[in-house]
Amino acid sequence: MQYIHSEFQRISINTEICFGKPCISGTRMPVSSVLSYLSSGMTVEEMISEFDWLKKEDILEALAFASYMMNEKIIPLKKAS
Image (cartoon, rainbow, N blue to C red; front, side, top):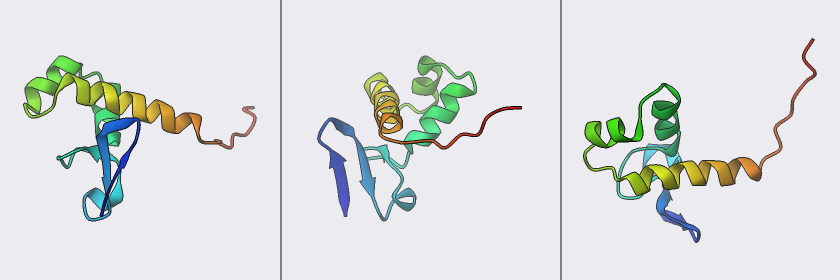
């Protein structure tokens, strides 16, 4: 079964694809992989070149989705010493 968030039409969750992780719709590219590539220094242009089926809008929506999801979470922290 596939689920799509009403605000993020380019992101879908399918329990049978990538263990149910949020992915770019119609692909097996998890949002977490997009974030990993970008955080490792890869540019949006490099990602589009490497994964020619990705569009800039897919990457930007993955970032927006991740940001939205982080706003919905409480992350327990401990005081640094």
